[in-house]
Image 1: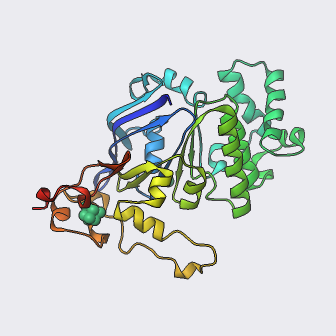
Image 2 (image 1 turned 90 degrees about the horizontal axis):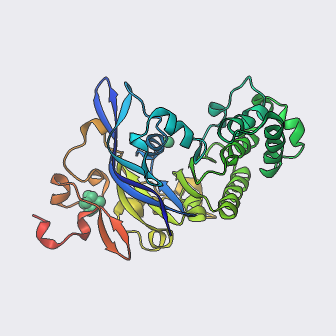
Image 3 (image 1 turned 135 degrees about the vertical axis):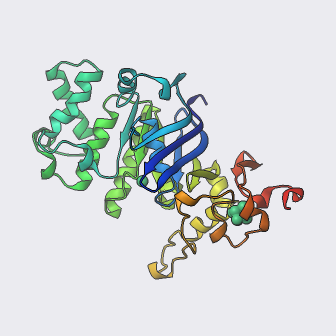
Length: 327
Ligand code: SF4
Ligand code: MG
């Protein structure tokens, strides 16, 4: 399968009063045509910042992409000027967020907000754009589409608003859809409907998807390929079946253990002991060592690199290194 996005050595920093935070630290991965790549990890692991970096949403003085490249269909997004990036953003790459309200304008009618990218990117005339907007509203499973087009965001439920966001995202037939926790704020039934819809669109359009989530249930349902992040680094990656059947990194194993099982009470859920390290104090060590039951002396002094551990699966853990490095 053709690779549509190649990220190499991406690093993104934020400047805080206490110092520089490496939110994303030298990560590399690929997204292939028609594939869904899930990025999973706890909050603060750098998964949203990765998406923001791709979309050009990390801006100085708050932060900046400090290194690497993001090749999208042969062009490095980090080296494009603002206008060229804007042309790609929302057109060839679309994004949906956890909170649809944060991306919609509260004082503009839904229909007009769907029409805008059609007019801007696809140069549609107003009348045709309106017709297309109404079609898109029905396509995302909302009835009375004409009436909804003339409503304001506050008149719709959270689930409906997220459908509207999807309508906007798919309106220009993007090649890549980035979805950051798209169903986290919704109740379980609506969540399932939205995920089904995303999968159907992906399959019928052939677009690729980069789905960011902390929910392994979502990963199991949606992913072809999974990237596990911890403290700004990729700690494990592989095909979804490999990762679920044979997780290698102790952090991935912990995440899988903490996944709810049908019939089990919530208060019996396993949770990984300890906390994510302070991003300002990352030392030359495995960032997971304080929480890892397999921690060895080398883990406290040297950072493990991401290495192939068989069948294309990769992990960053000293457990899979040759014995001689354990000194
Ligand atoms: Fe645990 Fe060491 Fe592997 Fe880190 S490198 S996950 S501390 S065994
Ligand atoms: Mg996030």
